[in-house]
Length: 160
Image 1: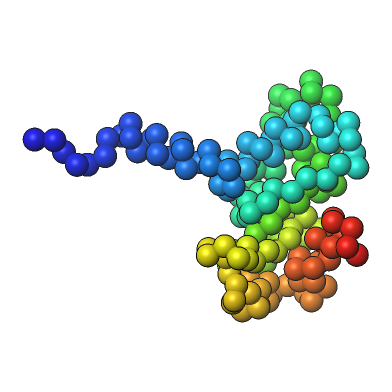
Image 2: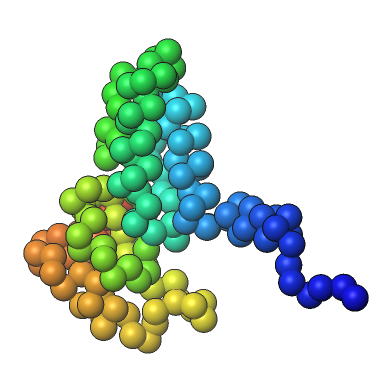
């Protein structure tokens, strides 16, 4: 009789496929490391990049870890700043709904976060966008909320 339970191998394969999907938040750390450690941001200091639909929650850990690894073993790359400094100068991420984002914004930079509804996709927050914004960003100062829901995207895309 054949068991219908998944094997460890099949579970690991499924997990790897999930993490490697474009847009998966956990895989975004690899994208971020590749962009920064490649030296592209150092060579093109006016270049901006966006990690679309990648969220915010994972960024404090990954940026901190990249800074540690840079100090410990990646000085030979010739970067003039820590990875987190390149992030703050040139990077941005978008999110739709993260209940703890108000606690994290200061760690990744209010200028580096943009909210999006993901409309018209069915997994987006529309038509409850205002409610989600109030719930997720309500603890932030009004000027910080405005940056996240309007100003940052407007400046990045030349609309403001």
